[in-house]
Length: 216
Image 1 (cartoon, rainbow, N blue to C red):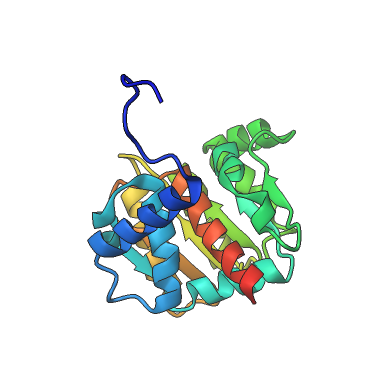
Image 2: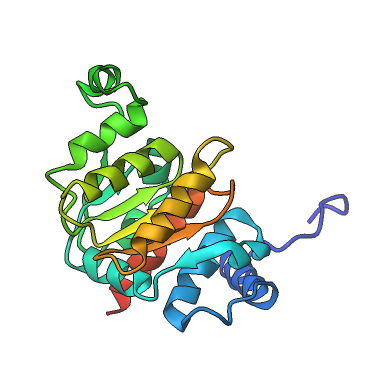
């Protein structure tokens, strides 16, 4: 090694293990069950913010339902390509379909007709897949709002909603609504209050469930 080369950890497994060790040491995880804590740890690892644990709201069944749905081959419905890209396919033992409808034909027209965003209109095309699905939203608050509206109107229930839309307009409000409607609902959920969120968090939650499914 050149004398001028910086000293840093290079071993992939050592980096992985130390990263998760530090998350466990720095994040307050005691209010979560062990399996939900594993999902929270992966979400924190994806964003580098241990204090995120204080703002996580999750149903006790979210990890169990995510793993069960993925283990049974349920589709994964994503609000954007970034969420889909972050899902590690080798973790998906049943080769689950990863579905993004944002750029599908007709979405732009539906958005104009409905007077909403393309992200919300894209949710319209989830109807035939939503029952028992794993939903991962990491970008658009309007997608989460629209999905919750459709569920209230009688759509079949997904297995879980992993809701992490990010931003300063509608993000906090959409996640608050998810937490309100998710309590006692037929689906499990996890979200983070406030403006924080993002595709990496949503993908990490899916990956956590997929890893657990692979162990079962």
